[in-house]
View 1: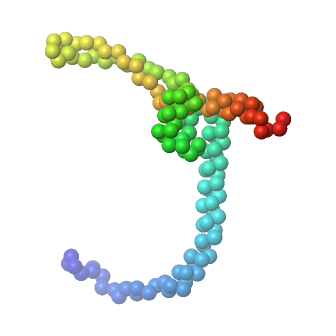
View 2: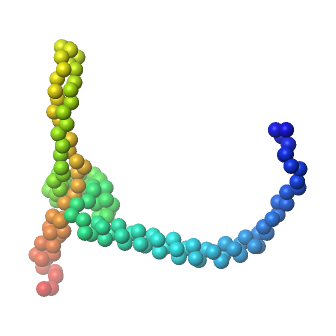
View 3: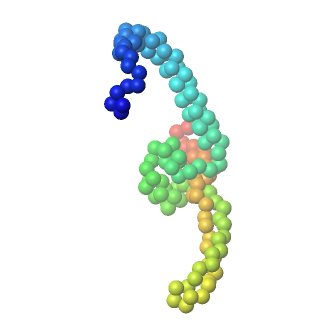
Length: 138
């Protein structure tokens, strides 16, 4: 029973001809392409407007938008070219048992938030450089 079909019916393997399939695809492809392109454009424009109005941005997004590597971005941060935004930090208290003495100890740690790039400072710096540029006619 495992290698036989329960119902013995001849299956027609040529249900759809190749020409019919090609014609359906050629008719549906332009509509599918326009719908996909509109969706992609909307998502990109929404993301760009969100980033344009945001005061901070993640390091990964900033590097991708400006076309630089993460190593160059870290150098920029170290040299002060790009400023980090202040992120909230929280304090965490834990009770740990000391391995040597066996007594309980209270350990207080600070957990910092994700490092974000300060876009407002970046925009202002670029604006000031544009004002001082001698090649721009005012």
